[in-house]
Length: 241
Ligand code: FPP
Image (cartoon, rainbow, N blue to C red; front, side, top):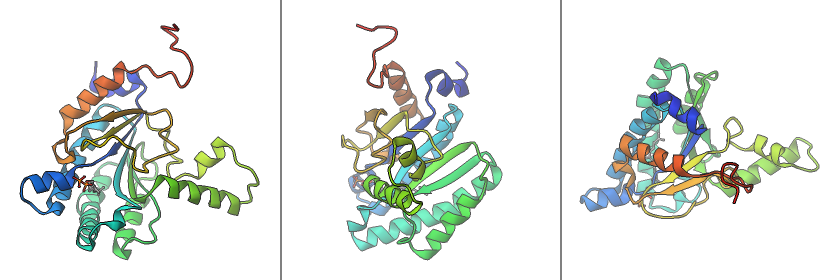
């Protein structure tokens, strides 16, 4: 099958990833944890290219959670600097060269350092007509997102809410629900990531630490996804036993 038809054939439009294991990757090598995040950022670029080449239209990654502020100040500051550098040095030039790529940051930007916030806004303003969406969850929490969505809907005058209205107020309103969620690093939990959106998503947990995750691992995950039968609470049409 031609690579870019894979996603269409499998109805795989959106992949979400919890990029876990950067710290352990570095510690195992006697390096500071921040080196793991640097390697993690490199892995993200590889994976993004691979995902696009398969014809997947949306990629959502968890870069920093509302709970990650509890980490040592030095690591938080290091991550903020790394993310800003990645946006300015790698993402903005890539956006200039690829008008079909559109970036959205999921989460409340208010508590971010002002220069990072400005870099995020600058990236979001580029390519608003893009057809491939990279969603970067930054100061993101699933519960926080729901509270924010409901409060915004109330402010807009909604008296009652239905699922469609709630979805339209989420940070991910521009993306369909993820079809596949991958978590690296060996933990088997959602950790407050896309709580509403993952209700019928296929989940894959792998022991691979994020900096070691590569194109072959994506192929393996996609092959596993292809074996899953998605029933959405109904019956399997081909095998309704
Ligand atoms: C989890 O590993 C990873 C993070 C909290 C940060 C992930 C961020 C990046 C890969 C940089 C992304 C950059 C952009 C521009 C989106 P961990 O530290 O929890 O690992 P551990 O479980 O081994 O401690």
